[in-house]
Length: 149
Image 1 (cartoon, rainbow, N blue to C red):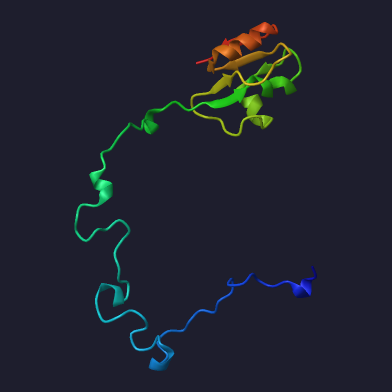
Image 2 (tube, rainbow, N blue to C red):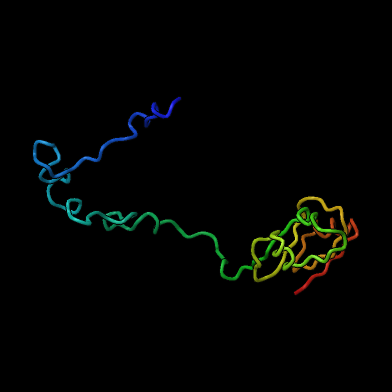
């Protein structure tokens, strides 16, 4: 393969067709839009989902479920396996994890420690929430848990 032999795949490059350039072109006069009507007008057509005045399908389908997005609690999360980078007996806080880029964002409800991965060093971890598996893994290696509000 050489650069002078490169070319687009067949059918990839088709020239745009100029409409309204005489009857002989096949796209003259009304330019392929037919005679009058909504679709022939400038800005014509209907919005997506419009069904000619009938009640649209999206309004006929019942609403299901519940979204509690505005009132949910948002935590910055970290797995215990990610804390393996710290020296033994280090005091781990959300601010330290954010400074070291272990978590990407400080969420309003604090830090939640999850039980993914393995921990081999005792650490002092200050967080708002711990999963049961995270507590078990931290205490198994001699670490301490401090729940802050």
